Image (cartoon, rainbow, N blue to C red; front, side, top):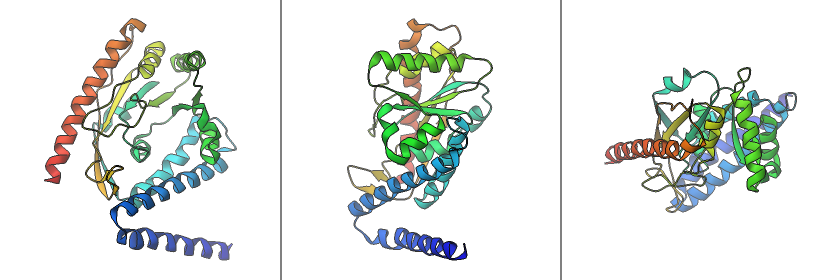
Length: 274
């Protein structure tokens, strides 16, 4: 055991030296590529760790605590600092609800891990289930997988809504309503799936907005440095009494509120950069 610990300690020392000494000496574009490669490698390692720890309690949402805890190390490693406005709004919420946030990059996971509530899950494409350790870990944590077919996806979401509506069960669901990564000056168009789910389950929608990463991260420019992210938990929107006919209006109201906050956070970030 002592020899194994010595070996692991040596590997960690080499890794930390490589990350903090060698990588900063590389050109920006190569720093970006190397840091992203390390990031995805870490996600695979976290998937393996989660798989081992979650095998005893498969499909339990509480298993998400394992990958979310490991992301704290990743935030430290990459030097990302988070400032969260109105965190009490999220911590005080009881019961089931739907979380929606803007989606800029795969590094969003670091912010998601910081705010992840108890008994929460995500909705993902079924193809992710076959993505090695990562997919197996997601399945063990209780990730909701949906097929590409519209009818089967809608059926799965109805089953999820029925579970969320139960008084004897608590399920929170985190969804990126843009459906794809958007890193521009404004948010992308919102898909209505998250809002259909909230209305069907009659649970609140909790919008969360993360500030623009452009001051420290840009795939297009090959930039990935240390930086600060500001996040805001907006006022939850109740859906009690709403019907499918109200989904479009609910979607617009949530997007408008998130877009306004995104613009405010971006302006504040630009002022700090100046």
